[in-house]
Length: 103
Image (cartoon, rainbow, N blue to C red; front, side):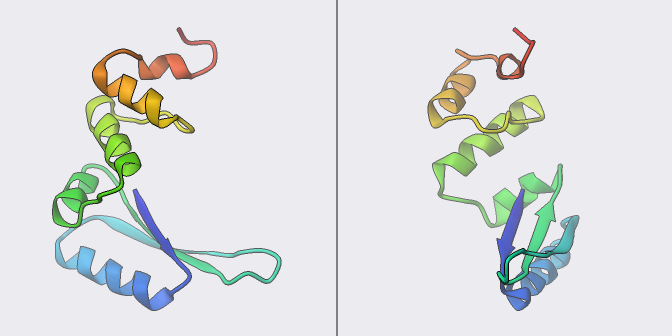
């Protein structure tokens, strides 16, 4: 789970807040191409992502579904549609089946 911004101050302050809660995370800078502003990212890793969701949370259904799938299966397949994520959560779709050669 990560938060990205071109504002270094915003991401640094977010990092400080997470550090205050004892949440393990990483602060990273990533370079953009073609004259775009560099970006900054705070990455929160398991099991601290659950702490992050409890403290800060999200109202975005996409993020909530991905988090719930990650908690249940230990991963969430990339590039899933909202229908696929709902089917995974209902037990109608095995998340492993979304990888090539797995059925």
